[in-house]
Length: 134
Length: 128
Image 1 (cartoon, rainbow over the protein chains, first blue to last red):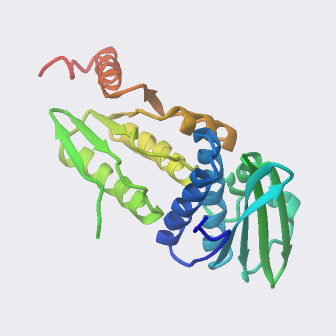
Image 2 (cartoon, each protein chain N blue to C red):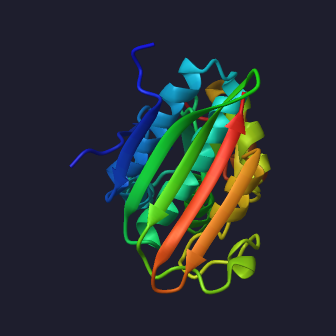
């Protein structure tokens, strides 16, 4: 395959969020995800990319194909060097937001993914990793 | 700067979203639409999202805000044409679009608008 297995993107404008959606969609199509699964991972990516931009002050996304036995999937790693999240448990709650959104970004992205993890240190930044299997 | 076009059809406004909107574009649509409801004295707004491959919480919230603002401006909003995969994803995301009227396609959306306007004794929608 000519497509690289990993891809790095920067997220610093709201146009970059759109570009992230399109890159993740393309990767999901290439891996043979069905339409609903494509839509789920793209929507999760959009939520997390917006968080990276709005709360993290911008950052990066790593898109990786992952293999486990015969299963193939996509792993997305969003990283920023922003202020971090002091209380992750609270941030994961539906409807909780420190901005002016709906507070569904993290919790919604978790529901749309098969695997979800978040690491954050106040003053250092945040890393959110999700995996969606085909 | 790019803009989403708003078409006037009688006393209705029709918006067909055909691009993957970034957040600022979505906000400008919201602003343009509320201005246009007033300037065109529109009674109803149809938003066709059949080309949208994804609706996330930001875009979903925008639909809710547009519906609420149009109501305050004496107009009804109907969102039409949502793709099944988008609907499934939206609900799993945690967004039910309560407060936003939806219809399967433009034709049904138009019927819904007419019915809403008639039932509130507006008489609008029966003409043309």
